[in-house]
Every structure is written in C-alpha cells, then in structure tokens.
Length: 236
Image (cartoon, rainbow, N blue to C red; front, side, top):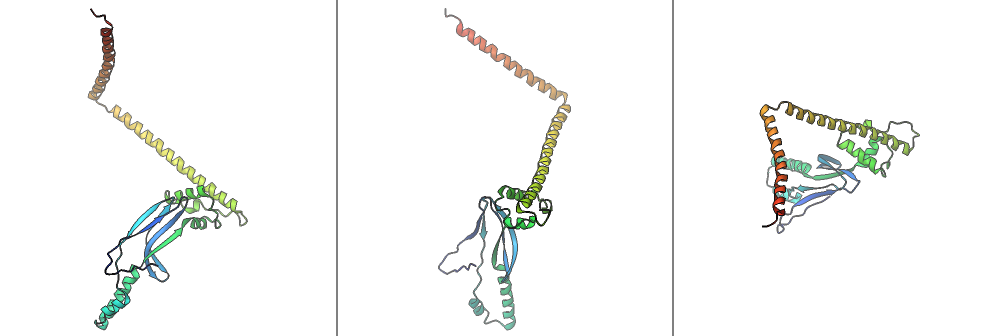
C-alpha cells in the first residue's frame, strides 16, 4: 500500500501511474477501487504488450485522518455524527485506489487447455494468439486443445493449438485477399462508369489536351533544330 503524507509547508505534487511491458510479454492492467480488505472493483483496464507504455495521471483528494475527523464531529448531535460516520465510510470505501495486474500468458494456457508453462518458449504462437484474441475477437473454442486423450504429451497439445491457429490465420488472410480484390473491382468499375458517363464536352476537352501535348512535343524538337542550325552557321 501507499499512504501520502502532506504537510502545510509542502506544496501540492502531481502523481501518475506508469506501466510498461517488455518485449514479447503482455499483461492486463486494471485500475479501480478497493471494496474491502479482500475485494477489488475494477473500473478500467488496458492490455499492454511488446514495449507498450502508458502514463495515467492520478487525481488525488486528501481525506482527514481519524483523529481530525473525530475532533471535527465532536460538537455534533448523535444523529449528525452517525450521518458523518456513514458518509466517511462511503468515502473510504469508494476512494481507496487499487491496481491489479494479470499476466496473460498463464491465463491463455488455462483457456486453451494447455499445461502450465506450455507457452513459455512459444513466442510466435503467443503473438498470434494475442492478435486473434485482441484484434479479431476469435472465440477460444476454435483455438483450444480438443482433448484428444489424457495421455497426450505437451508437444502434441501445443502442436494441436498451432494447427488451429494456422487454420484460422489462413481464413483471415483469404478474407483479406478477397476484400482487396473486391476493392480493385470496385475501383475499375468506377473508372469505367466515369468514362461511360463522360459528355461530349469532356471528350472534346480530353482530345484538346492530347493534341496540345502532342503539339508541344513536336514544337520542342523543331526549336532545338533551329537553335542548332543557328549555332552551326558560319560568321560573315
């Protein structure tokens, strides 16, 4: 835990939460409030992986200590004291900031039906799994180990997951290629429609531009030949 002590002579300081993931590592960072001694209520979460870095400013509000609070309510009526204590309890319950970090690789191993530590050296497989889960929202049922037998070895389980990942990645690549081909067809169709819908004035303008550019190309060699003939003529 962390308790911030503040003195009258000290100025206000700003604090921020800094989190950074190492290369080929990933974790889930959750921020929230403490609901009790063993209870955490997450409010927001973010996935950090492959050298991702995040800075979260902390907006802190100081609360009076127990002694200051007791002295402040000493002159109140019993009903007002009960209300003040209840309100302070709500403040303490909802204002104690909490952080929770969940490593994603062990959770993926449990989700995919793999033994503990099965993805430790499978860097490429782990990256592909993260991409499928985060970027494409692929259900884990399509990637998990099917349970081909209780006596299956660790290598067989990992190879089964690799095969599922490869199959899903192939479907995604085929879908991307199909989308690219459709976009190319749409672009070609758009150009064809523009040419088909061109008016006579547009065609005349295009012909004028073509003839003007051809005339300029012919005019330039003629000027060059005249200049060469003038330079080569003998002086009188």
